[in-house]
Length: 95
Image 1 (spheres, rainbow, N blue to C red):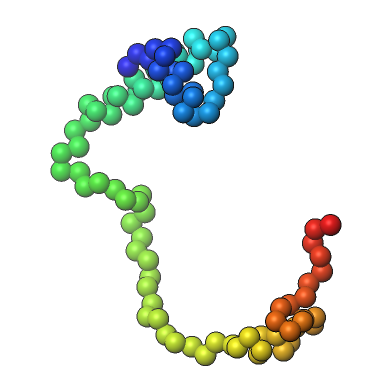
Image 2: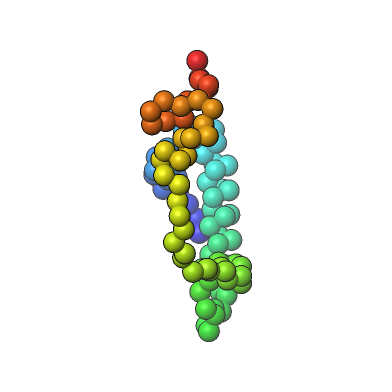
C-alpha cells in the first residue's frame, strides 16, 4: 500500500506527532513498507481457524467465595504504633 503525504500528515496529527519536512520521505517509505507487510496477512487462508482471545491455554483456577470474619475498624487500629481516632499515622513522605 502506498501512503501519501496528506495521509501521513493526518496520521501524525491524530497521533500528536511532529514530523519534520526532512523526515517525511523516510517516514512515508517506512510506513508504506509496514503496511505492505501487513497486507500480506490477507493472503493467509484462515478458514476454520478459531479467533484467539489469548495465546495462553491455561485456565484460571477458580475457588468458591467464602464469607470470613473481617476485622473491624477498631480492631485494625489496636496494634497501630501511631494513630488518631480513625487513621494510621505515618511519617511524611513528601516535603
